[in-house]
Image 1 (tube, rainbow, N blue to C red):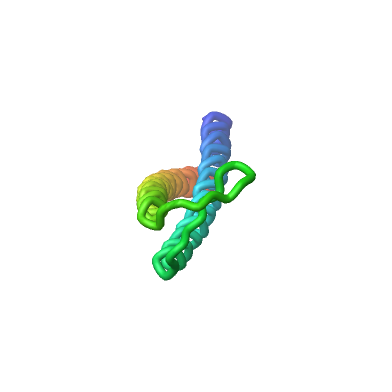
Image 2 (cartoon, rainbow, N blue to C red; image 1 turned 45 degrees about the vertical axis):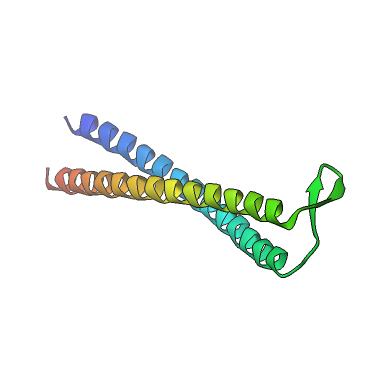
Length: 115
Protein backbone atom coordinates (compact mmCIF):
# COMPACT_ATOMS: atom_id res chain seq x y z
CA UNK A 1 0.00 0.00 0.00
CA UNK A 2 2.84 2.34 0.88
CA UNK A 3 4.41 1.92 -2.59
CA UNK A 4 1.09 2.72 -4.30
CA UNK A 5 0.75 5.92 -2.33
CA UNK A 6 4.31 6.93 -3.10
CA UNK A 7 3.74 6.27 -6.82
CA UNK A 8 0.58 8.37 -6.73
CA UNK A 9 2.39 11.07 -4.82
CA UNK A 10 5.26 10.97 -7.29
CA UNK A 11 2.83 11.33 -10.19
CA UNK A 12 1.14 14.25 -8.47
CA UNK A 13 4.51 15.89 -7.88
CA UNK A 14 5.36 15.53 -11.56
CA UNK A 15 1.96 16.97 -12.45
CA UNK A 16 2.61 19.86 -10.07
CA UNK A 17 5.95 20.57 -11.77
CA UNK A 18 4.23 20.63 -15.17
CA UNK A 19 1.61 23.04 -13.88
CA UNK A 20 4.35 25.29 -12.49
CA UNK A 21 6.09 25.27 -15.89
CA UNK A 22 2.78 26.16 -17.55
CA UNK A 23 2.35 29.04 -15.12
CA UNK A 24 5.84 30.29 -16.00
CA UNK A 25 4.98 30.11 -19.72
CA UNK A 26 1.75 32.03 -19.15
CA UNK A 27 3.61 34.68 -17.15
CA UNK A 28 6.15 35.04 -19.94
CA UNK A 29 3.39 35.47 -22.52
CA UNK A 30 1.63 38.00 -20.27
CA UNK A 31 4.85 39.98 -20.00
CA UNK A 32 5.32 39.97 -23.78
CA UNK A 33 1.73 41.05 -24.42
CA UNK A 34 2.00 43.75 -21.75
CA UNK A 35 5.09 45.20 -23.40
CA UNK A 36 3.38 45.08 -26.81
CA UNK A 37 0.37 46.84 -25.30
CA UNK A 38 2.63 49.54 -23.86
CA UNK A 39 4.29 49.99 -27.26
CA UNK A 40 0.87 50.30 -28.91
CA UNK A 41 -0.25 52.91 -26.38
CA UNK A 42 2.94 54.90 -26.99
CA UNK A 43 2.44 54.65 -30.76
CA UNK A 44 -1.17 55.79 -30.40
CA UNK A 45 -0.19 58.86 -28.41
CA UNK A 46 2.53 59.72 -30.95
CA UNK A 47 0.23 59.26 -33.94
CA UNK A 48 -2.43 61.46 -32.36
CA UNK A 49 0.10 64.28 -31.95
CA UNK A 50 1.27 64.33 -35.58
CA UNK A 51 -0.35 65.23 -38.87
CA UNK A 52 1.47 62.74 -41.09
CA UNK A 53 1.44 59.06 -40.32
CA UNK A 54 3.43 56.22 -41.81
CA UNK A 55 2.74 52.53 -41.65
CA UNK A 56 5.31 49.79 -42.10
CA UNK A 57 4.24 47.19 -44.66
CA UNK A 58 6.85 44.49 -45.21
CA UNK A 59 10.15 46.27 -45.76
CA UNK A 60 8.73 49.68 -46.69
CA UNK A 61 7.07 52.58 -44.94
CA UNK A 62 4.04 54.07 -46.63
CA UNK A 63 2.14 57.26 -45.95
CA UNK A 64 -1.30 56.52 -44.54
CA UNK A 65 -4.23 58.45 -43.15
CA UNK A 66 -3.85 59.23 -39.49
CA UNK A 67 -7.41 58.11 -38.80
CA UNK A 68 -6.84 54.72 -40.45
CA UNK A 69 -3.64 54.14 -38.51
CA UNK A 70 -5.32 55.09 -35.23
CA UNK A 71 -8.18 52.65 -35.94
CA UNK A 72 -5.68 49.91 -36.78
CA UNK A 73 -3.73 50.53 -33.57
CA UNK A 74 -6.93 50.59 -31.50
CA UNK A 75 -7.99 47.22 -32.95
CA UNK A 76 -4.60 45.73 -32.13
CA UNK A 77 -4.80 47.19 -28.61
CA UNK A 78 -8.23 45.64 -28.08
CA UNK A 79 -7.01 42.26 -29.31
CA UNK A 80 -4.02 42.36 -26.95
CA UNK A 81 -6.26 43.33 -24.04
CA UNK A 82 -8.50 40.31 -24.75
CA UNK A 83 -5.47 38.03 -24.96
CA UNK A 84 -4.15 39.39 -21.66
CA UNK A 85 -7.51 38.74 -19.98
CA UNK A 86 -7.50 35.20 -21.33
CA UNK A 87 -3.97 34.62 -20.03
CA UNK A 88 -4.92 36.01 -16.62
CA UNK A 89 -7.85 33.58 -16.41
CA UNK A 90 -5.60 30.74 -17.52
CA UNK A 91 -3.01 31.69 -14.90
CA UNK A 92 -5.66 31.82 -12.18
CA UNK A 93 -7.00 28.37 -13.09
CA UNK A 94 -3.49 26.92 -13.15
CA UNK A 95 -2.67 28.44 -9.77
CA UNK A 96 -5.88 27.03 -8.27
CA UNK A 97 -5.10 23.61 -9.70
CA UNK A 98 -1.53 23.78 -8.40
CA UNK A 99 -2.71 24.82 -4.96
CA UNK A 100 -5.20 21.94 -4.75
CA UNK A 101 -2.62 19.47 -5.97
CA UNK A 102 -0.05 20.79 -3.52
CA UNK A 103 -2.49 20.34 -0.63
CA UNK A 104 -3.13 16.78 -1.84
CA UNK A 105 0.56 15.97 -1.98
CA UNK A 106 1.27 17.49 1.42
CA UNK A 107 -1.64 15.54 2.89
CA UNK A 108 -0.39 12.30 1.36
CA UNK A 109 3.16 12.93 2.55
CA UNK A 110 1.95 13.61 6.08
CA UNK A 111 -0.10 10.41 5.88
CA UNK A 112 3.01 8.46 4.78
CA UNK A 113 5.05 9.60 7.76
CA UNK A 114 2.43 8.40 10.25
CA UNK A 115 2.41 4.83 8.98
